[in-house]
Image 1 (cartoon, rainbow over the protein chains, first blue to last red):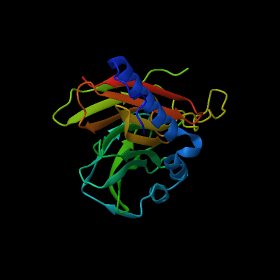
Image 2: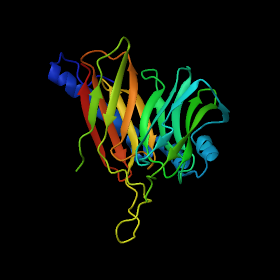
Image 3: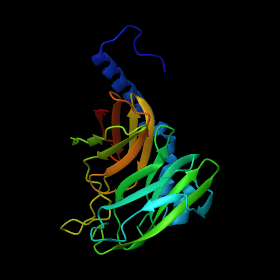
Image 4: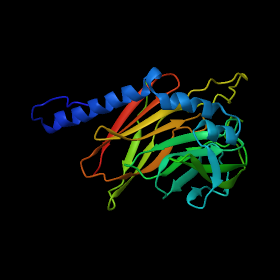
Length: 160
Length: 104
C-alpha cells in the first residue's frame, strides 16, 4: 500500500493516516463481496453439530490436546454471559474457535491469529443449557486441536 | 446510531500488552421471543477487526452466541507506548463502527 502522503506530517496528520489506513483495511476486509473469510465462515456458523462446525471452519483432523487450554467456570447462574478462555502456546496456529456443543448452532466465535497477537482469547458467550464447551486451535497443517470442559448452567441464556 | 466500544489497554509488560474490549450491541440471537410471542430477529456483530497503527493484527467472526455487549480480551505482541489500536465491528445489518485507543 503506498503512503498516503510523501511530505513530512504533523502528529495529528499521522494519526489521521493511521485511521485512514485502518479504514481502507476495514473497507477491504468487510466489503460484502470481498471478505472471503466470512463467506467461508458462514457455513460453520450455520452448522448444527460440533464436528460439522469445526470442519466447515477449516479443521481437518480433530484431536484432543493438552497443549490447548480452555478456561471456563464449572457452574454458572447466568447462561447469558459465560466467560470462556481459549489459548495455546503452540506455534503455527491459524485460528482459535470457541464452541458450545448444545447451543442451536455450536460455533460461537472464530479468532484469526497473526504473528502480532498471542493465540489466547477470552470471550463471553451465551449458553442455552448445561453443555460441553470446546476451545479448538486450527493449525496450519490442518489439525484441529481441542480441549473441552463441561459448564453447568442453572439459568439458560439463549432466549428463555 | 451506534454506541461506543470501551477499550482498556493495560500498560505493556515486556513484549506483551493485554487489551480488553467491550462493544455495545444487543447481540440478539434470533431465538428470543418478545412479549407478544414473536421471534425477535437476529441482530449481532459478525465481523471484528483490530489494527495496530493501521496494520491488521487480528480479526474475528462471531455468531449470535456471543453475549450482549460483547467482551473480548486478547494479548498483543510488540506494542509500544503511543501505538494506536483501532477496534472495528460490522453486524448482520451492515452497520459498522470503529473506536480507537492509544497504548500508554
